[in-house]
Image (cartoon, rainbow, N blue to C red):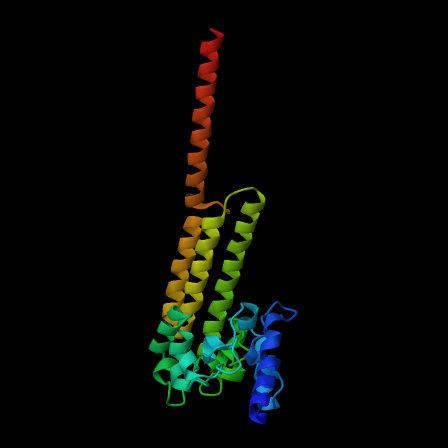
Length: 262
């Protein structure tokens, strides 16, 4: 057998074998991770960075951004399998928008989006490329924002984000308390999750007036559903409905017993 075929077989065996294994965090070890981990720091460091990212935590692997086949060492970088390599900066919003569509819409309308390709920041400027960071007010700091302009506007946006994050955390705690009391909270949890996503998306507009307006609207919707006291009109209406059904059943039972006893 020719030497090149022996080498191909050895590499294939080396890369495919670990696919059935998992990391300590439960992440699947793909041929991308296996092969890149054994390369020079320039090519292996991205694996280490990815392993501590929010993407890794959520089970989003290499192919979500780079394409290719993560289970086939021979065809892993084949364009026929969708491999696209390193995306160019101007293509990043569309790529990230595959999962974060609302955020991308706001970003593209913003001053940042309009400056894309002309030195303006892209998604990875703030969130990182492989060590993707979880969205938080900490990303709005002098380290990034002061590179192109003063920090004043970013400070106002960060302040608004901190305030609204605190508000959302308060509602989250109210929902947890309801659950402890045996109240069904599935619908409220879904609504809070949706509003949180909407709230974080609007921050990518970098329009302070729009951010404040949308934040107030979101707070009004939460007040209506959950309420300042932790029940809210929507939940109270549900409790009243259930209470009416129970009361009706009790009255029916009592009337029936009275007729039987008579």
